[in-house]
Length: 323
Ligand code: AMP
Image (cartoon, rainbow, N blue to C red; front, side, top):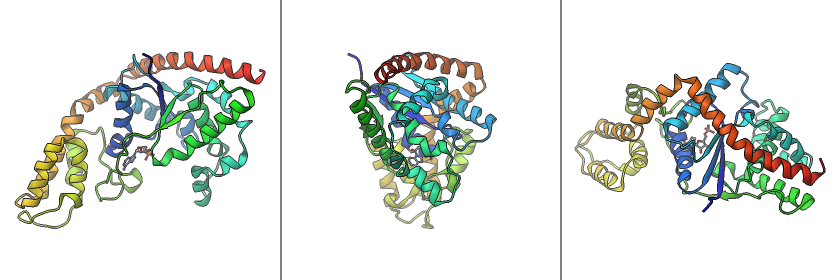
């Protein structure tokens, strides 16, 4: 039985942290079990802000190594670099010709940049059209969406429905949102949302010593070892939940409440749980990161698979619009 296709793009914006892993990478990888997944590294999108060529390349390799280390199946699924399929820019132009400027003016990313008086280049303004092209060029049935991307998928659906209305109901597959289990916002070392801009992250793949050091810096209240503690109010425990079974959580929660356990010990348990899930993957990551030719090989394989689909859709699109 053929599976429905789910597509996701990931921006190459530096080494991911545990918030990225729990909120985006781990759910994306789990989708492999139920869908035909297409993942792409959104390097054309990154160009709206990244001005360092070497950095773009390094961050692209970082992501390939991350997915490989976390066990992505490159035979059954498709993992590629957006810019390896240049047809997406041609398609983006075609879609931009049926997209109202007003629609783009309502996009969050554009409005946000404008209100902060940041540079708004045409790429940033047209971002939702390229995103629609990314999704529609691969006949994607589903796009996993978190709270932050709901609007973009709605725009893609608007664009696809308009295209089909003009050129034929069966030309483009109109994608549906795939709403997975909502992953809570992962707190950083200070309890705020884990984010590079708050300088409060625990890196996904750093040497074990460094990960441990980060975990030991998680902020807590100042209760003493003997005091009874509330796991639900503790940043350490909020992270611990994501790496452990219900049973392990119940055991640690009980120790919090009973008193007699310091936060240092809870941190050590968190570190061990993180290590259990990610220790091996980290070793694999560092090895792969030293092998650019292996990483390029993965991208080439993905490019060939993605391109086959893209060329079919392109043919359908061009003939429907009279090119
Ligand atoms: P960013 O590079 O910050 O845009 O993050 C990329 C994706 O990672 C987001 O769309 C979220 O799905 C996920 N993510 C980032 N930070 C967190 C966090 N603190 N908690 C949960 N998910 C996160």
